[in-house]
Image (tube, rainbow, N blue to C red; front, side, top):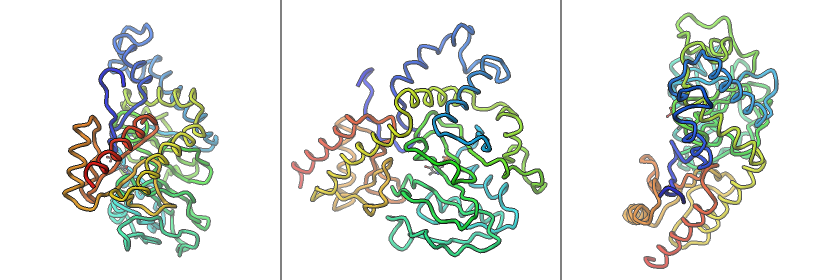
Length: 362
Ligand SMILES: *Cc1c(COP(=O)(O)O)cnc(C)c1O
């Protein structure tokens, strides 16, 4: 790796493509003859407007987003979406949630402040190590939407088949899998993703929302900023947006387009994940935590036979030049996050390290 950079397995904020960081560095002091850095620009300037418009246009191309969907760049991270979704989409005050781990639990907790939440499927019985069957959910007639966390960052599960929502709106938290594989946007009412996992710098959430879900008649208590319509009506420039994140994410969108788009990412991500999972499955010391058919290609949790050994591997990995392999405090063990920007060589190097650790210690 150049510049003394290391393989960083952080779940987020996480690695960005080196080529993108180099481009940003080259434009830092004077963005394309504007005489200023993007961080210093008015969000109402022509030059920034173009940065924003290009970012949206490139994302639309990348995901093939239909014309009847709006693309919004909002702040507040995933945590604000946990509240914004029920505030904006609950008309009858009833919503269905699939409970698959920490991030769907957080979403459920927050939604309960605004209405009735029905948990229509859960994998709590096996510590969230699988995705429950969602082919025949018991969805009440008055449900406003069905909510999923499509990739549980902490637990390491992902949906390879979307739930049958029986005609209800599907809402998905794609934070830790956004742009990792092709996505048929038309199957969703709303997709949101905090960009600090698989795209760019923290502080921005991309929301893709079907136009008919933008409401004029929101309850009076809903803050102006937390109405999707506010952002849709103002090209995400109602107030000062996170200009820096929009700029950096725009660079990543362009980079992905140049490198074969989402189909190419999917191929690469499958290959990368297979290197790690194949090793874990063949190991007598390390064990992958998640059921085979529901394994995330982005976040790979695994364990050794004991907590002490988990901690020892984390320490040894750090000494060997890898970082952020410690599992989330709520589940323990280890976790390797291998997003789009993690090179294949990084995963191969990690496997080599783990194999040597096993040979030396087991
Ligand atoms: C990180 C994460 C969140 C929370 O994002 P914040 O921006 O920290 O609020 C929500 N959902 C998923 C799937 C995440 O990975």
